[in-house]
Image (cartoon, rainbow, N blue to C red; front, top):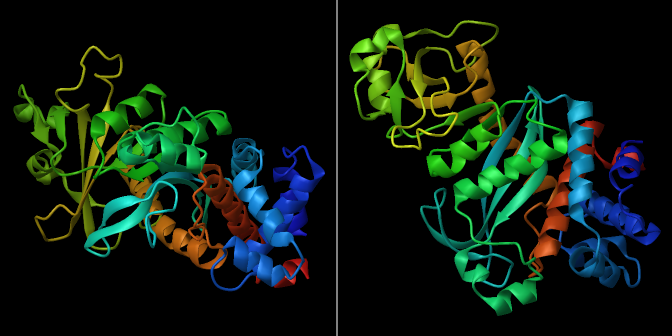
Length: 376
């Protein structure tokens, strides 16, 4: 049975028998409970006297560490799913009120206005057919970091400080890379809204194979011999470089459609953004800029920067499409196992809930059927 197999392996790090029992109960509640997956609703659906207090303590006030569980989850997923890439995805989680941990006023692009919400960064293992989250990092706003009362009430560890979105993203990925035993798979992310120096340099220093969607204004240095006339002192924007290399546009080749039909790609060899510390040992390392354009138009639709310079452009862009799959997978995680339904004030509680919700999604994914038929 899928549930037993996953529980036996992932909860083996929980040294106490009662913790392993509560983890299984909570996991089943996430899978079975209709509607929002709050502790109160899970307990009501389980219809067991006193279970609400026990589950609340297990999630918010217990001592078990979610990090070893996430390590086991990451390794289990890497072994069973053989993912093609790690995809990093920032997620804004709207919340009613201001009491939930790390909530602040943030701009929500999908709603076009500021909302109360949490900013999280997820790392998902993604294959051609599916994706599943293996780790999360909560970006704690400055007003929480500097408020001793809020920190104490939320049980926030001393080492937690303020981070930009780029820094939060970088640390989320490096933690997963360490759990997996190294950067053995490409990392794909949309970095257009992140500070490039805070995002790119730490990942490159860790020798992480990168594929990052970048903004049109990102400054780069041209190193492609075919564009020798543009190798001038000072930066050129990514868009300007792509426009200068329009004569190199060609249809996407290789195995399978990397992007939608009717698109052309342009590849240009570049170096790290001008103005970065050129004393850094990776400053002169090769990079490739890949521009995606609709056929017959001069508009550049997407710009990607990658360290995968020995891989075909078609293969690289096939990896780029995984970002779209992640959005669908996260919607499924939210709808089916309630990953955003934790409403408590506890920082450890938030991490334990999203960890167990990620495992619940994995169970559904492995079962490939209605969950009730798996553990009936």
